[in-house]
Image 1: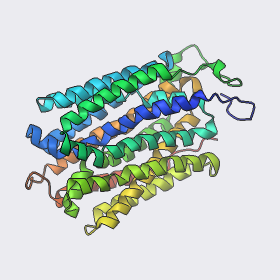
Image 2: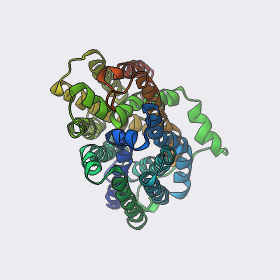
Image 3: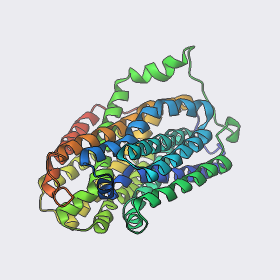
Length: 418
């Protein structure tokens, strides 16, 4: 795909595409972290424990991850518009099932269906943006998409806590189900798929060779860089989203002796950091500093420092904890946008949907695994008045710190594409 020079006419519909996808992606992140705020409600409603809660929350990530190769394939074959719309309808059904769940098993099934539904958004977005936007805009656009998603993560903190306190968590998720139906209809009626004739000057190359399966699957799976990117995503994203999406609010309540609303306000700092870091570092590498790999190493180093602050400083007060949460969000936002921009650099435009679908399970499998692992470590302690004490979280967060160190070391194996 040619993507430089003033001769390219950039169709203004690309901003419609970006806006509609961003609205849908808002709820992808909302669902990703919402369990943290209603964790105590779930424990009480179903009379369950942290391991079961971690399993229920992780169902989103397991199903999200496992379907990504299929989502990528259908994105290349059917186009992003239909994939996003149909999967968003599935997410709406999952919201209704979760809201009406009579048992923990039904709640887990609803959570799983939500994961299936929202899993059909990000890969089609990568495909659409890689077609509608130029390569020196791509990291910035992906950063803006991550920022839009993290606005949803913000709404899943204090606003969701308020809604759960006033309406109940069941009614809150039923309302989200109706909103999801409206968004699916918006995708069908307002968004259109890219066609080569939409932008004069765009040249599309079909993958060479007679065996498309070999081009789409065997080549990336045989690449060491593919696995390095995947493992980095698995570890770094897994630990941050496990913290933000499940344990941050109850941990902050325990360690700082604050109520749920205040703890949710502090948890909101992480997505605020995402909103700043993702487009900032995307723009930085698009316009100023071209080495994505070096910036990724730097950001992973800062992320590791934030985990060390949580693990080794037991006397953190509100200001110190707020600083750590902010830099955790900023660095993870930058890492996310730059890793995907790096994937775009090494992928053929015609097959980026399939390639992205193969990579995208990694971060979400990471979240699913770390939610269960940290929950099982947490269950080694006993509940005190229906909540875990601050010291109960130590072993879980040590695991996160060690994982962050491993991702930092692994990033030195990434190779710059030239």
